[in-house]
Amino acid sequence: MASTVPASGVADTQRTTKKNTLVAACTAHAAHDGLSDLVYVFLPVWQDMFALSYVWLSVLRSAYALTLATLQIPAATLSAKVRPAHLLVISTLVTALGWFLAGLAGSALALGGALVIAGIGASVQHPIASAMVARAYGSAAKRPLGLYNFAGDIGKSVLPAVAAALLTYGTYHSVVMVCAGVGLLAALLIWTLVRNVVTPDPSKVAKAAKAPVHDSAKSKALGRGFQALLSTAVLDSAVRMGFLTFLPFIIKAQGGSLAQTGFALTLVFIGGAVGKFCCGWFADVLGSARTILLTELLTAALIAVVLMAPLAWAMIALPFLGVVLNGTSSVLYGAVTDVVDSATLEKSYSVFYTGTIGAGALAPVLYGFAGDHLGVTAAVLIIAGTAAVAFLPVTIVSLRHPGLFDQ
Image (cartoon, rainbow, N blue to C red; front, side, top):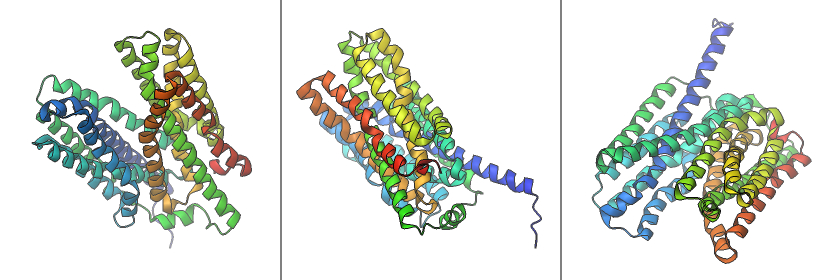
């Protein structure tokens, strides 16, 4: 029996489903990343409230960050038992609950427990939301994933800044409750957007999207493609976090003031937000492998410019460096959809985010060791060198398997 639903109606429904999924994922990313970066705003407040040493402040920061990083893969496993859209709503509510409890905490131990709860909720968002967007848009997912990544930077920029401003007018407890309320509102908005969206069964989507891979050579190529993307993403994350760690010292060595250091970081972050938005489009035009090669080489070159050039020229270069420094990640995440089955997107993204978050946490320590023993200039040149070779895994695999990252 023929369908009575007009083709235009089906198309409109599909467009609405895609749009709602993307807006829900962007809302989740902005809310979760913004709430995660609140820790930096509240560290001085917690130090005064509980008379904490810097070591214990680091422990509090790690309570959130390590929980978020280590639970990425278990969170993806949950998506096989709980509908991903519902899981995204629940995780956002758990994060909001964690911050609500942080506002009530009367001791450092209770605060640490609250941050662990918030980290548990935050661990779900990256793999689940990324997979939802990738699955909704299929082969056209690169630009939407770029927009999704851009939304995270918006959250990081806006929510901590608003919280810092509110602290000048209100108490710590009231500000934290407002932030927890933001999480609650985000969960309600996500639920409103996705409650009527029917999520296709991942295995059926995979079969519809492409024939099962019976060719062992093709299967190996896809596996190598994912490994190459992950290797490049780990190096790219190490470069990004390593450079941001040393940027204040570069500006200081060039005679910059504390205000100029803050402005320099702002320029990088602005450029980074633009890069995450635009580099997905570049990947559509140039191809993922070419875009990754170009952005990594530009990252290495611009890091060298910022290190060696006078302060004024370094400031001019920083927003352009931010574009390629942050923008590469959007291309890498988007290319994952080219080398994994739709049915394994959650698991693949959970492994991907675990690798990049772990590299971002470890890299400053390793580069810091180099800085202590070789000096800041040498450490930053090592970072630039890392960027100069980061594209190699993807480039080598793409030369062996042309078109693999642009299917």
